[in-house]
Structure formats: structure tokens, C-alpha cells
Image 1: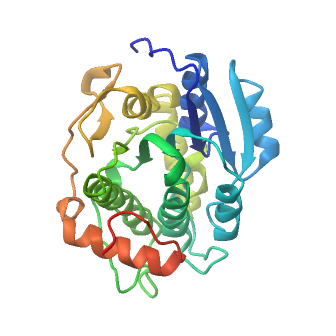
Image 2: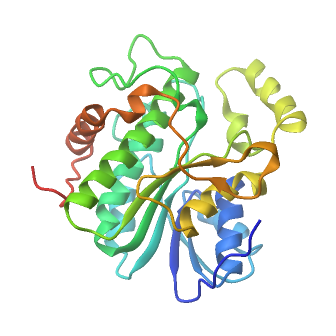
Length: 289
């Protein structure tokens, strides 16, 4: 991978940075001189992860499945943020609810990051990078039943949450542009990388299949972090979608087209944003409507 620019004096918040792609991204950013905030649910695991990173780090508690925790994190923040990296997520878990009653996957992967981003946005100086997945190309967003009551499937719920990440990025960029902000929004996906994300599937059989896949097919978490780092540091057009290159490339490939047609539908993105404001109680100051 190409050497990163000198990031001295820059601050990066990475959610879910205690393991996997988030940890690898944090390592790269800190090694280049950046100050990295590991925003994690379990601060003990966060401190253990931070101890493996060479460079400037700190650990702060953040539970994206609890909006009170999201608000507490944001309320305690009072410094500039170069980039917010919305990395944390859960994948294909059994049906359940967050503290605030959201379906767990969209609640953690989308609503939590939606609230966090909008609450921290006044402090962000450069960009917001949200980690989606190639699996966003699945069931379309069901705005009338985001909890998927009566039709819940672990994989379908994960796909919906990752599509929500794509739509969020597009609408965030639209609002930033119309507000005249210099902050930009990008989405990235790591490809199939071996992390502990795959070990919590609702099906024990699928856990075994993914374990085998991690051993045989998946790239490393370090490789999977490269699109994230590219989205954070490269000079890219607004609302770029960064994925792993073919044939083992060392950087993300800018300008990928989202595989889901709905990921390019601005009216759906705006509708999801409105629903997200209503559900989280967090309203954006961008582009009064």
C-alpha cells in the first residue's frame, strides 16, 4: 500500500476500532502521525487494542445500540475532528432490539451512526467515511417496516442496514453540498475480509461456513482496511464509493457504482433521512427543509 501522508495534528474517530478492520485502520492512521480515538463499546478491549498501536491514541466508550451512549459521547466531545470513520457494525445476528427498540442490525449499523454523525458534524473538518458492504445489493429498504417484523432474516436485515449506509452517505453529501460545507462524505467496503464480524451469525451452521471461508477465501483484516484508509486520505470526488481492487490491488478503487439500484435513488435517501431523524430524535442542521 502507498505510504500515507503525514497526519500529524489530525484527529480521527474510528468506531469499533478494538478489532478487525477498524483496528487495522487505526494502526495505519496512528503510524502516520494521526491521533486516533477508539470509540468502542467495551473499553477494556479498547485499551488492550490501543496498547498494540504505535502512536497517539485514546479510548472512549460508545455503544451505538444505545442512543443515550451516543449522545453522551457527542456531548463530551469539544475538539476538531478531521474524519469520523463509521466502521463499527454487527452482522447477520439473531433477531433482537436495541435499547431504543430498533431492530439490532439497522439500529447499530445505521441509526447509531446517523445520530453520531449529526451530533458530531459541527466538529468535523474534512470528511465522514461510512463502511458499507458489497452485500448492500439485496432486499430494498422497507421504510414502512424497518424492524422487518414478521419477515426477519439475519442476512436480509444485514443487507438492509448496509444499503442504509449507502443511502445515508448520498443524502449526507447532498446536504453538505447544499449547505456550502467543505466536508465530504464517502462510503467504503472491505470485500470479504477475515474478522470476528462473521462469528455471530444466528445460525451455527453459517458460523461454521464463515469460519471455513475466513480460512480459505477471505483476505486479511489489514488488506480489508485499505479501502477505508483510501477513503480517509485520498483526494476523491464527493460521495465516492471505495472498494477493494481486483487482482490484489493495494488501494481502494474510487468511483465504484453501487450494485443496488436503490442505492442511487435520491428520493429514497431523503425519505430514509427523514425517518432516521424521527426515530433517533437527532435533527441535522444541514439544509433546512
